[in-house]
Length: 385
Image (cartoon, rainbow, N blue to C red; front, side):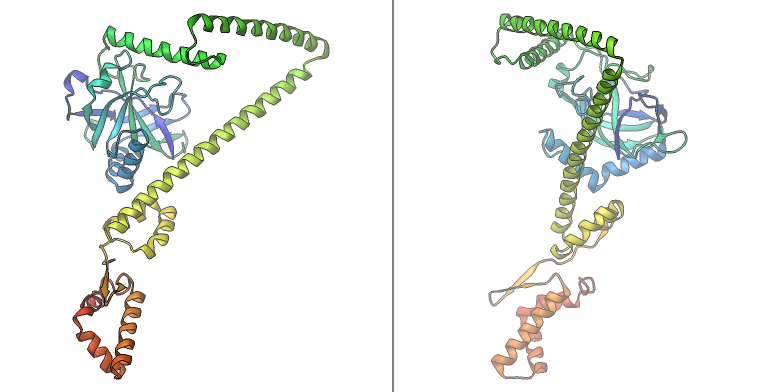
């Protein structure tokens, strides 16, 4: 699965969207990707699929995990950010929560979300107007021409420069006071980055920063002199050194991309393991599976997540409780455990009362202490559990 941020058209203006109102997130249509390499296909089928995954156990667990990751609490809503700080921290270095989507629905117009606004966040938003840009999960581009089909909504970003020029804004322009605050905040961020780059203390004054920049300029002049010497060398000895430099740069780029992919893969594996654990914890807690079945279902989730999630959601809850008889804990969750408990009780009665097995069985069956054990054995839903 991959993530893509697409900008939607025909969204309503904020002046008509109050807390709890439905707002259009994406209309139906075919939208080129920002780089033009593939097209997003978004029709009623895709909208229904997005709503389906939103309401699924896996979808809810994913949003809870994501919100906890961002420090927003164990919510099942999807965040609406100022821009896309999750995917482009260079452009949006500070994560500003402007609103939340608490529900989704597919209508004749497209995919709509129920919106709850964050007044404090809106005061600090980027100078607008801002337009909706959904962040989708989808399979890699395929087909001729290449297309993608959104399957899951992770979040929404409000951005100032949409690909679709006719898209109306969700927010009006920010106030000048808000813009000034945002610019001051950005200035402080850039100043801190410059202090880090120059290796200065966090309390460095503007004069110290200026001296650091002058020293950096001296170094840059030295590098320029060295580059001139290098150019002279290349003019005399051909472009062999340039080709070697290009090759080394290419290797460095490929190595960096490989390391980034490895890191992303590990992050995805960690998140996926957490989601699977949460799903199995929930299923075990409501009695849909026993502790002994947990390993089997973990493998089934990996092999075919969609079918397994449906099975867990519709599976009848089992009696995974235990009873205590004469201080002994008796497991009722599996046929083997119940058979073992019954054999132990019969054997003890034969030994204590010197009777036959049939007589001992009748006495155990008549003993009210063992009623829960016989009830579990008689329940057709638990005979093979």
